Length: 453
Image (tube, rainbow, N blue to C red; front, side):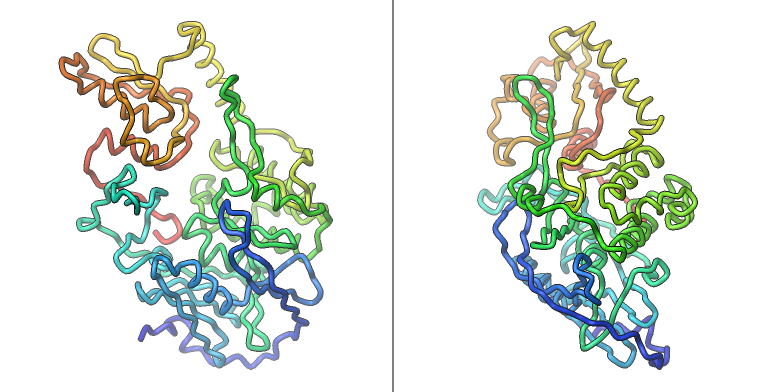
């Protein structure tokens, strides 16, 4: 039996009389991914009459995640210690656990990376491709070599939620953590999922669940459009938000930016809570006007951090999807980068009025040019492309397959290969790793979780 008393076992039981709260439980439908029809019912708890800030009872999370993971076989168990006032969630396959100490106000990970792994799985995996296609039995772009994998376990990590002002309530047999905090720490961040709540439904899925970029085939321009799920999410009436939700939002933001995403080192920040206060962004972020708070968040990311990678995703449902935010625009780094890309674009237009060919040969050198890492085709289509026809090029993967076929053709003069990424703005991680695999062959790719080390 896993001993999950590692942190708090030596402490004496709490003797303080905790504040008593008025609790109300309501059940909401859960929409998973891009399927707009609800697939689950989730009880949420509201505290002291605050109706826009839901809490999740941790035993209900265990029930929900076991239902979601029923196909993978991964199972979680919940363990209550009433005397020590904590609730722990155990991954029974990897013998790892996450413990919430309600007296101390902490979240404790025995091994963050292994909490959502399977017994034979990799504890960190940045590929979105599932590996093997269940229908064809073929690898979906990648064949994982699992035996020689060298995985270094993550370090024990403790997040002091109480220090950020994130509330935790143990009362009436329930162990309550704000919905977004509980989901992000337990499931969302480890699995790359987001959670949304619009007062009527709970939505869980990837970053493109609510809106996606659509390319106009005639003009080549990209526009952002709501998905069917996104239309459903934004169908509710925008509204003001409570003081409690506003203050919690800033605390949650500071906590996540301090511990995840690797932004502290990149920006030489000791504490995002302190930075938000010193830069006075917290005044706007705690506004009960959601449009003011959204604008402050967009400004902080695009104008203050200005790191060319972090971005403001979507307005809150309380603001409304089409509401135009009053922001300061972008910072100097972004402006300079855009100017440089425009110069490259003008040079390309001068030498290639009809557009830069994605693949071309000059003497014994092949040039491959693409401005985005993307996967636009169904995975199975990559196995049936006519690689003698340049019309097969639809995205990064098909371009590389076509280029590889041309470079290796009989009598090919190619001795050098140049990737032109001069105007590449990033994109899909699977496509980027496919490029590495093509260049390097079977090789280890090392990466580090900045939270667990």
